Image 1 (spheres, rainbow, N blue to C red):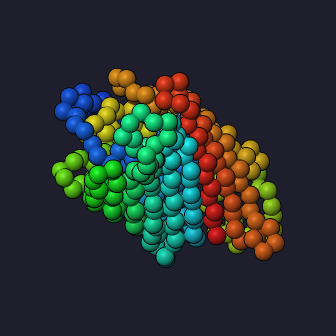
Image 2: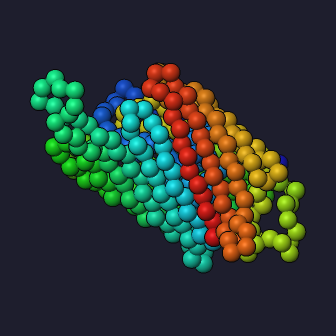
Image 3: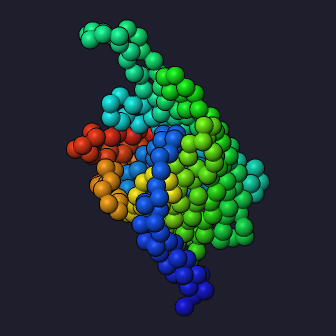
Length: 330
């Protein structure tokens, strides 16, 4: 058996056994975590695949999922997402990454905001409103370790604004990714939100392990002469991607497992479907679906690659969730 396949099997066995071994102990000792907005899953593409992305980690979305995957950025990539959630809570994310020789650096923003009403008496209109929520800004760095492995990290400043109190903190994400079997197989492991908040609250720290298997699209939409400079620097694009993640919160939630698939048609349109399964009761369990459209720019935008993604997560209890995002490569 090929050495890389043996390594992949061993790592897979270890990663998938950790959540099952420690799930009960962690849940029994669970506490209450602050800065709950850090649990938001940014990016329509990962969410459309059920929240499984730590092993795929091959576009700018990975700045939020596994910073080691930023080594897949070949030039510059920018993304932004708007998440329409329940009870008028607005979640946004912005990420940017740029290659600097072997290193790739990036910056990110993740926030969640809503308005609450103040009333002294039972009036139809509020006496006043106040915006509450929180955000985290991060700086990331990723570096390849040879041809098959990369490491990466993100340092974050966290701010949470409540009606009568502001809370601040610092956190870090650390990740590693292996790309084996001629880059078809990806194995990722990341620790998220390791840090502290003022006032002694815990951050929603978690461990995420992921697998991904990709097949390449052999049909080229343009000849070598017609490709833009950005397209020439891009790696082969996926035809199929099969992904699976195990997510292990270390503070205040139950472990969950995520699976998904992505299929690109004519290198332009993608269909995605995913499913998440939580141990014990978890309101986020269930189906997710998504679509994507990508195309290179024309004329003056010939060296820019555009991608638009949408994800839909139905929920009878909390209400349906919609995410809209874009990725620009230039």
